[in-house]
Image (cartoon, rainbow, N blue to C red; front, side, top):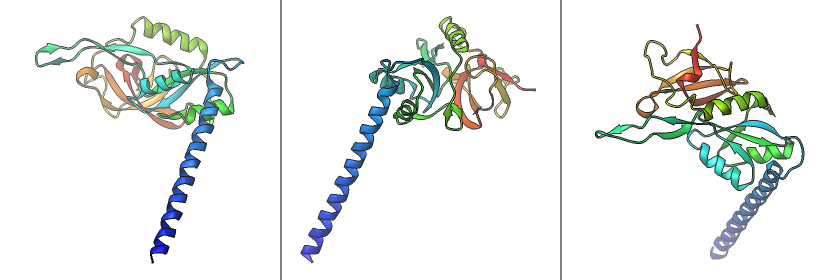
Length: 217
């Protein structure tokens, strides 16, 4: 009986070691793929949108920076909250929650590396084919964000927008994309709404300022 237990224990340990080795090999492969997305790669660079976990945009951007991959998150200034009679200072937040933009030389290995990065859900595109963002659109959006066009993104008029309303995005890389309001913000987020975007047939939830949203008639 003792021998059988020992054999079982050795078999379990061996299986665990094989799983660890497999995981290490996969991480090594993903890391090598990710180098194909860094700034050192020759070729024509294009911008792409990564769909990431809401609230983890900066975490993903930091991982990209460590991998020497050029990324950008459009930021805006939100009004500070008043807590116990004291007004907190304004804070920064992504203009379009749940997205990080990257500039890379497109390629299968590059995209595989980006998809394997912790926090990344998928790369915006039709099916499995990532779609580049037009530079003209992105540069215009960068100028708007830098100029404060989305800061303190507008006030919430209950009669203008409601949860369940169908809306369209009026500017930026996702201009003309449609969606549905899931919730209207409150407190520090009262100038924003949670919109379920239809991005090439895939639902993508994103917090965005009311200045970017227009209700469809």
